[in-house]
Amino acid sequence: MATQEEKQPSILAVDCGTTGLKATLVAKDGRTLATAMHDYRNKTRSSAGGFVEQLPEDWWCASRQK
Image (cartoon, rainbow, N blue to C red; front, side, top):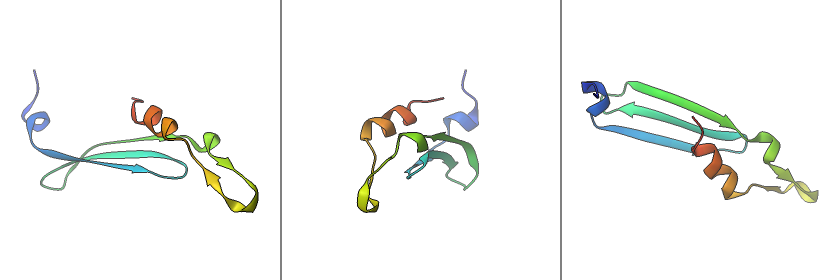
């Protein structure tokens, strides 16, 4: 059964950055309830001219990690 804290309204913030996906679950009163990070740095592709390419599939896979 879920606790009162698990039932309260909260906000999930997700950051798809250049080195990994970060997520934080924040209660409406500002308390951090949970954080997670999944690194996909080795999947980022660089090319001549300084361009960097990432695949949305990498972001999706990172978001599904525990």
